[in-house]
Length: 178
Image 1 (cartoon, rainbow, N blue to C red):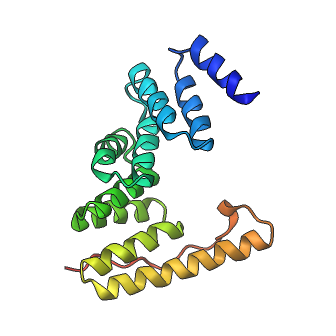
Image 2 (image 1 turned 60 degrees about the horizontal axis):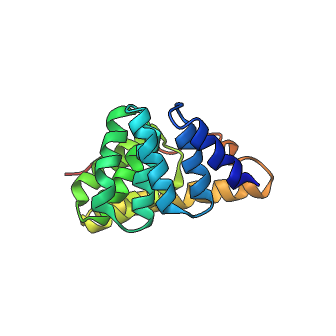
């Protein structure tokens, strides 16, 4: 069975780079967050520059509504992989959940710049802009979310992969207003 094999490999190759990360990903798929967190932390001990393990921990903390615990891992993931839109997105979501709206917007805007065709970024930005009383920006982000999300759904209905869903460049994203 898969679990026994993962456990065996994780034990036999405990110090091999990415083994604990792969085991942690398996545990996440099994919804065993506690063991997954432990595996990701072992990966960080083995490979201190592993941003993906930190990002996984931050995501689990986001999912479990523990933003304060997730922020240090997300910040370190951004430091290690500054061009990773997912790292900026998760950091933005954690900051938003903690009530740090201005910092959340900054991180989410970076994610948008790095991945301008990702609907969930616009959804999160719309929420953050609304909280910051930036109504026009919130409406633009909401409209872009709806447009991109519709394109993804239509493409998936035609059997296309998510990555192939949107061929054209999205309209210009809203500039930061003061």
